[in-house]
Length: 174
Image 1 (cartoon, helix red, strand yellow):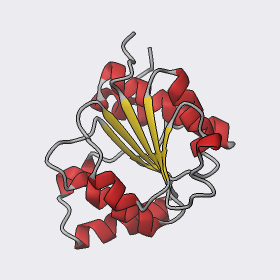
Image 2 (cartoon, one colour):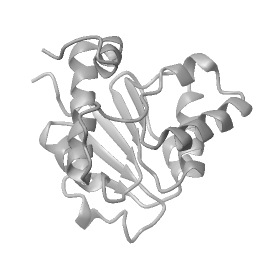
Image 3 (cartoon, rainbow, N blue to C red):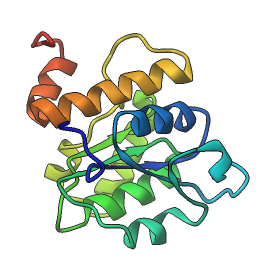
Image 4 (cartoon, rainbow, N blue to C red):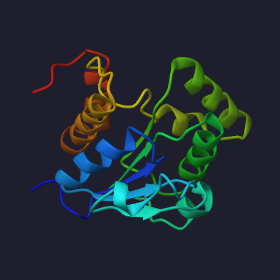
């Protein structure tokens, strides 16, 4: 009952990982919004039970409420989209409960460098969960989605700092 529909997940990117992620999030009681600028992939038929928005990322994010009950997962098709979405989210006055970015260390570093050059505060960047998901050795889209949902549940129930310690292997999940 701790996960209720007032808890929202915004998934930026409607590719192969977004489908199982959205499905799991709906099943776990999240209100799910999927955003992608490609109408062929951001199609409601691919995301049952979700609000699907097939429009540009940044203007869409600008119009969505983001607060302590909002979880944002960035799984777009390119680091330019990731950086633009992150800048919009991290430059807000109210913080999301969770902001996670998928990607290799190289891709993540490129995004962080882009944002630093744009003046995004280091403290905001330090709060970013990346790579997204708990480190369980996930490989398939479904496994990656499960690792992301496990991390979101951990943040929701135990808090961001405890989730960070678990990610680093400094604390046992219980």
